[in-house]
Image (cartoon, rainbow, N blue to C red; front, top):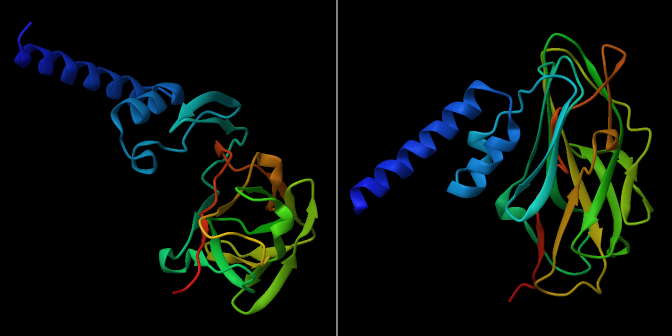
Length: 220
């Protein structure tokens, strides 16, 4: 088989897979395409999926699971964002910005009640303090438990048809070393407790929802 035929068959194979994934809710097929052909995960994969659906997937060498327990996945848009210019910190730094938790509501208000984050990359005790803040106003301070940061009794309300965010800020141990990277993930749906219209609400997404990295570096 000459090179032209090889390319033609390869292209046809990609088109068939993309068509199949687009016409079904088979998230495993979608993630296969992302992994095999190096597509951008966020651009290609949609959160849309039938209620009650879950699937184990492997992407980028890590295992994730898509969980869709919510019948109304479009009531809340949730994302994690950061400022790349603020993604570095020195050991012992205090009040360092890590990332934003962004919520966008539609026709109903919501309340963020509790948030649990798994600390990845370093021992959680190296996070001396962690707080959720709105502007300069502290909303909730975390407690440590078995490698997790737990924010209890947040009770942060967002009105309907609104976009709002909470920033995560941390204070770091002076024992951290240059080159270490810290990430804080939402491991499972129950780790982010939300009420929408007074009822429990589950965010349909791939879990763990990985946070943004904070890299340890010393200024020259």
